[in-house]
Image 1 (cartoon, rainbow over the protein chains, first blue to last red):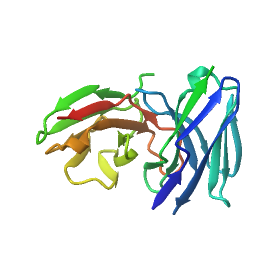
Image 2: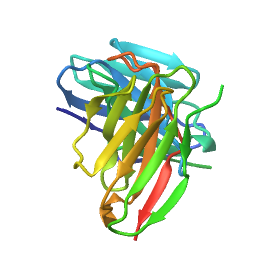
Image 3: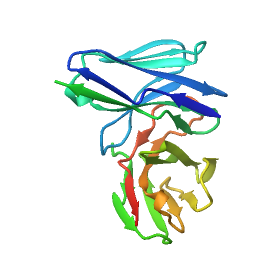
Length: 110
Length: 115
């Protein structure tokens, strides 16, 4: 089976940097995805790491280390609009099935 | 391009009733997955359809079922509703390739309340 663990909540101020860690235990691990979900909204895809290393997309970066069964999402230059829940997720090898972590609620304060 | 459309957005049902939710994926996407989101259990996979065939199923009772039509639109059905079925039901659309996550596009969901 698969399980992904992430912190439940993180609070930071505008302009700061936040790192959301995700540790996983999976069989048949393919890679690690990150999704953002605002209250009342749909999850939106942020990034996917199939290989070890850092992927950068604007202010957001995602990292994966397969040897450590660990990844993180880095949010830089935090803005108020970044207040949302962030989920790590892992796709299953056969078919399109995502297993999600419990989500990290990020609260950005002025 | 049009996004993933889920209908209805909100639904209130009584225990014991059944409900059908609909999802229209992005044009050209052949895979439709369904997820249940609750505060206690988070996002949980229900099932996935690809070219009208159920390809994956999550750990939900048989009261939860679905199907996919030839135009890739999908429906899910929940029979004999229970209070615990109250949740946000999300549909995700993708091209359908297995394995790597090419980025699922989620609909806005159907908020089901069972009273």
